[in-house]
Image (cartoon, rainbow, N blue to C red; front, side, top):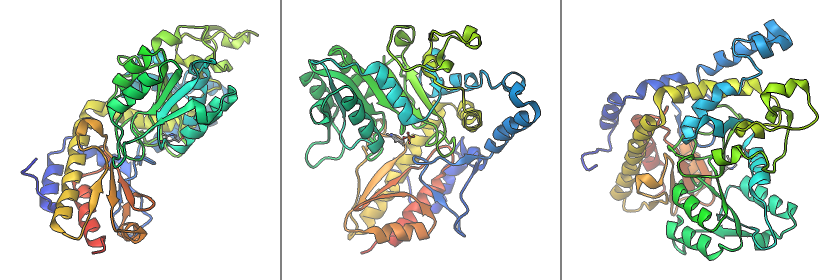
Length: 426
Ligand SMILES: *Cc1c(COP(=O)(O)O)cnc(C)c1O
């Protein structure tokens, strides 16, 4: 957009016509510094909605008033509590309600899903994942492979960027899937890479995986609440995400999982079972034999952690009010403005060498930008922090920033640039 300006006045003008600007006031911004904070780490821990307290207080009050009877008599009865979240979460990832359940934590869910969808044989046992996947995912994959008696070195294929590039080309992913077709059992990739912010072509990866008869799953930790998805229409086999990053459900908050309709109806599918996955109609007759529900709920092991879910519901209600497509419209513009501001300060200062390694095509990224500050060191990060900017720093010199459309403003984006410019070493 060539009529954009890198100025406070212009940023404020963009804020004044932002249809989502009122939502900023619905969140608490950290107060640990004695100055205005620019919070750019919603990709790590989303901010607390001001409504969260009321949602949790409701459950504390009902617990005080009802004790165990709260399972039936709480304002939102605890027995089916997870059901209050299902439809709203399903909309966020583009799924049918019978394909989604909010339960457990992310890595736990990944394991439970792999119990069902990683069924290796002697010939078909390999897993394709992205290079530099989030460490927890790497450990989960390695341990699954070993659990089945295979060697991770042989069984795990990592696909990375080409020499000198930062993001992974779609053609390379597809080629790798085809080349390993006979031995490939499963593909497990992030929906959005946590390090570069690259959005992977989930629809095409799923299609290519199915062509070689591999199961396809995605870790959506950095995708859920960040980009719209259509997991059902894309025919994805399974997916999981956490609730505490873009979905603002508090530290360690509950996770969500997706299992495509065609699998949830298959009661023969292998799985680890617990009582909350058992057929609701006779769960409390305590039968000896497990009879799974024919929805994603069948993967629930335990009764719902209601306090944590109440926090999640507070945030899902905000997403529901806005809708992912409205959020994405602002997100694209906000991040494009951030990109413009960074490029502007880079162009104005001949000694600067700021390289954005996140894809420049808005379709290939979410809200995050990852910046390599060539020639700069950790003192840059320390200066930014002391000026009230909360970002993520990775050695040796990568800054990850997430201008989150729910609560970040164009003014935040402008101020980040201004502070970055004066914090750089010449
Ligand atoms: C944040 C994140 C996790 C964290 O897993 P938890 O089980 O919630 O601790 C795992 N994988 C990815 C890709 C992440 O971004």
